[in-house]
Length: 548
Figure 1: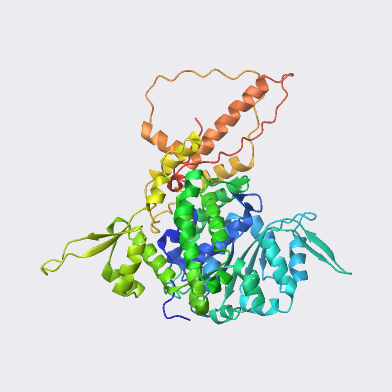
Figure 2: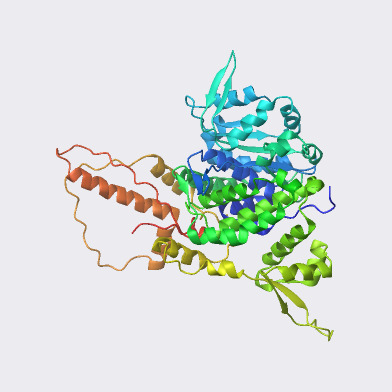
């Protein structure tokens, strides 16, 4: 392996998954990327095969198969997945009990039997596999070629069939999430294998993990409230995603993807050796962006979703290069991508040449050559250090490429709805990290009684009243007891949104009862479908949009 382990960009920790990961981080020695990938894998399994992302080549399912690659004892692979699973068990209790499988079967028959046991007829139900002994699986899979065949079909949601004299099994539209733990030396052992270069293992998303910190052994921390709040938010996001059929990419976002995100990934997998192990990096970027969007209760992918997906995919490619040096991309392409990402992370302040030299271990001549080829990096003169009287320092600033800027102009061929979304996204404030000392930012703090009321409202429909005529409402002329701002804040919270929903349902019930052909006949009112909110990601849980 190389000397320098990969470092993930903070851009990867985006949306709900990023906020939950930030909130859990002080309570675990597992790496943040290991926690987040475990969360996303389980979420991708829970939402099932309903939501897909439309591309020019068809529909892309949203299953995530993550691999935590880390040294035994210090990788903290099990620790990272463990705290993520506590959130999953709390958020999706029934799913966790019935559809989480410990260990991925090492034979093709065992694999399809596991899916068949949880299927309805021949239609598969979603399953989340946790394979903590991935090293053994890699060895066992070599003895049964059907394991690789069935995994490849499952990744693309294709029908799996196993027919022998004793068995005749068929599973349509299989959908499964997978999180696997392996040691670096065993992951490197797949190099040159048929499944490695033929399509099975490049359907996995490997990420390097290591111990993030040391926590006291005999000092317990109370994580109950953090787990509870995170589970509430994730359950709402999961229930929303299960109602979505298609996740779309607006035209302006698609153009930015082609001009900004796609070239970076293509540069990193430009060598034949790397492409064998990261051939599906582009497909994964689309899947990850779709999961980021759904977690924020949106059915449209934003540019920020692609930014986060790109950061995670780049980290995965760097993991492959770290564990499998022979698969590393060309030095020139790899350095250019690293320089661009490192400078972009600094924002408007940029980076000095010294910071780039030391962090990326790059020579001055190589840096000048790379910057000369990158339109996205601008060199600006700064100020000299106090008292030195030396030359002003040179700072490297990331700027949007000209092509990306053109994509934000008004396209007369697009609908006004997409234009409105584009303006809202461009005006959205920068996402802030979660302060763990206080209540997690992904949900406002509510009491147990308030949460019980919300759960009851979601699970039980209020019975419509049978009165033939609604009671008249007297006009209120007195001044309100609370300020207008306080009312607006309450109506912007999830509890306020639920209250408005119950009021609207009650009004609909009264109207239906009044128009019924026979007096006293109760009419069932169908619950309105939840709105697919298209607000900014940062405000989805704090200020959800509510119909007037």
